[in-house]
Image (tube, rainbow, N blue to C red; front, side, top):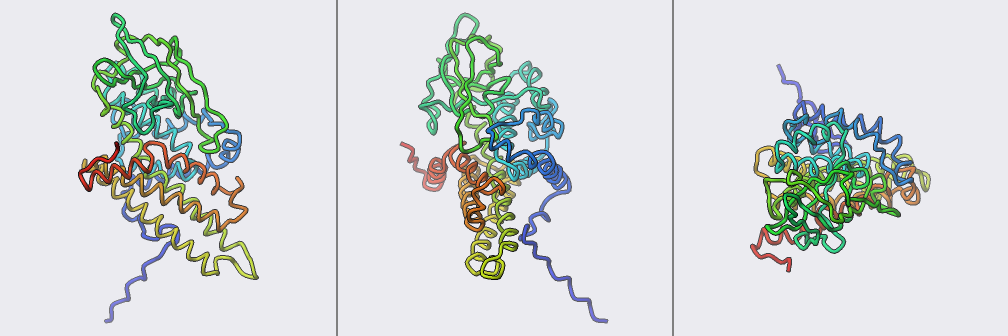
Length: 395
């Protein structure tokens, strides 16, 4: 009896390499849950929030109820899921808008992570459960007006005064700053760079939001102003001194970014693909023209490669094999390619691509910020250059 011919493999335009097949059941469940949340809660309002330049703070507790805040940490009310699951959540959030992935990334990787990793037990118990629930919002104070790519040159100072600390300085381009209940601020002390938990309401601590942004508009960006802010010894993170503290936090955040931008690219690719099949010129859909197909294929190639990079780095992180240089590889490649995919999608939509009726220009504008925050493409290039040559070229 002749054997039945094997089923012909399916080719999926929206998951060409069948990356879904590589995921575990829990990872798919988390991805699908976040995707539905984005569809139900973010997409209906994002055009208005982006246009008005506001972040809907009321969504923070909803993100907390889903377990998305600090979800890759363990204990203190967090989910403790795999790095890959966290990455998939970032991807789906940024498929909606970079502002929401940025909020989750800052809350979990830049504000909760340093407390979880370097904080005292008292600090952990006081802040982490409330932050995981979205009841307390955090921000990360590192960048300064004259200290961006070279954070070690920060001027913000912390000096002893009896049993207290006195902080002075300014931090700039701080996501969540204006709505944060606490800031994790990094300052130069006599013994090196130290981290401090600064609660909102501390005397001398104020914030000022940055307006007139054309990127990440559905996100709060602020300046932190510290003028003789007196903090008790218990406000200092006790278990880290030096730049390894803030840099380790940035590495956590960059990991979420290299996943997130795949979501932005996917949205623009899907939008361009559908538009090309419904938009008619010269009596036929523009998808039938060779140049349009070339654009779509190039977008497909880079999107799937970026997704595989994210997936592979996720598995490496879960196995404890992920170095900071690997994260630089992912951020440099995936942000660059995501931006190119979104720009190519804009050309397919032509004039329609610059309106908020479609998501493309919004993602392009957002990615222009993502390209340079958490380490510029130039800095990540030099990180990789040093990794392969052994020669540092920063200075």
